[in-house]
Structures are given as structure tokens and as C-alpha cells.
Length: 123
Image (tube, rainbow, N blue to C red; front, side):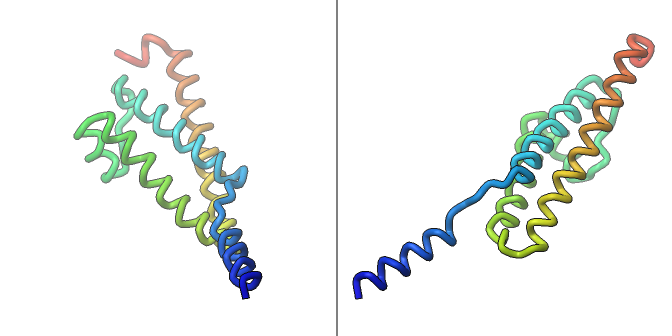
């Protein structure tokens, strides 16, 4: 009987473990970079936040903006990771990482444009 309880507890524990995939890590890092780039561009007043929820957060303070951005994406990723056994969840994480990758490339292109046209971009 004790062996059965131990095996059941071990099986439950292994299912409850939290595996962090490379796509999950990429999603978190790229989300952070997106937030930092967006914050930079907002502070320089060369861009405006189009997402109404994030605009409200930024109007409160830059700290509220970054905290909100990180919490929202982290919470979504946490839910997806809890259901990582579902193929749709794993695909959603990869798609999220790809989308944030594209956004970060866009930010880098915009930053390059600003640097190449400095100080004309700030007139």
C-alpha cells in the first residue's frame, strides 16, 4: 500500500513540475525587450502607445506600464505552461515568441532609423 501511495505522489509531482521551454524563455526575454524599447520611445516622445490598456498604464507611470506589461504576459505564459501537454498550448507559446521576435526586430529598425536621422527625428 505504501509503495502505491508513493508512486501516486511521485506521478502527481512529476506532472506538477514546471518545465521552461526555450520558446517560453524567448517569449519572456522578448516581451521584456519590447517593454523597454516601447518605454524608451514613449519617453523620447517619438512614438505613442496604441494599446489602450497599456496607454492607461503608461499614463499612471512608466513603472506601472512595465509592471503591467510583464505581469500580463507572464500570467498568460504561466497558464499556457500549465497546459503544456496540449499541443495548442505549445504552439501558442511558439507563436507568441515569434510575434514578439518580429516586434523586437521592428523596434531595432525604428531605433536604427532614429539614430541615423539624429537629431532631425526630434525636431
